[in-house]
Image (tube, rainbow, N blue to C red; front, side):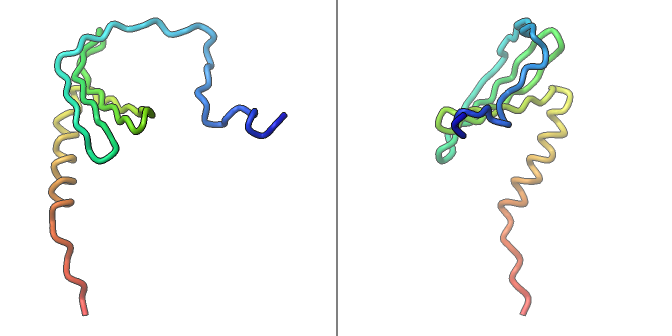
Length: 96
């Protein structure tokens, strides 16, 4: 076997031989933003389990997702706002 023919240790593994049933998701609101080479897609969705925010990062066709349940959005926003504030602060002058 040639080295590039080996299965990747990072490949998605299936532990259940049966495919998952497709869950109906309704999109309530969506938006996207382009930052440098990355596109971020924000979609507020709802399914039978409740509402959630799906954030998709697309970099040259490679997509990664995070999903935040609606019950955690206030806490997520609080932390996000703190990170934005910290990023905008001027760095402390080095001590001499």
